[in-house]
Length: 256
Image (cartoon, rainbow, N blue to C red; front, side):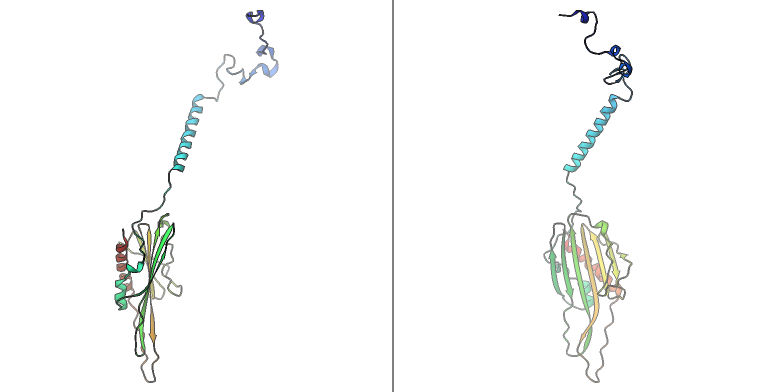
């Protein structure tokens, strides 16, 4: 049943604009002049399309972040080489052996396996020389290693190696590029021309070959005997050419 005040448009018991004094008479629950300003235009600064656009951008950002987190982040390079059980089976170094005038090497293999980097190494040296009297000769030692980087690409750090350091830690600061060998290849020589280093980057692997030459001998000359002279040192260009050829053969033998 409709009461008389309601029917006649009287007060419903709720305060209206005409029942307020001061600032409240101009401001409603949603700011000046109520939600719609009592017949006025919508308040400035609240555009529905801006809220919709912001929501769409936020949803896109959340979706992209969830997709990136769910996608495996694999930065490992493609591996083109296989890790041998014994690197010495492939590191014969025939070019260096010809310079050393030996048929075969005394060798020692090493192997380290790791979830991030696998390493194989072969240490080679010329066999002892049998001599009945005083004699001098050149002894060759070589060390060949390969690293397989299974999780990270070694390319950014390649070339940071100081180069050939020899047995006394003296190396020339300049590294020379070797074209046509792997993705990148660098070769260097020790200060006094008795050691060389060749490093190659290719297919997620880093190959290193160190060669050192030193004079050896045994026996002391008797009275009146001529003291044997040291043999001439090998030609540096010939050693480096042999190292490059031997590295080509090694990489070919270990390629998948």
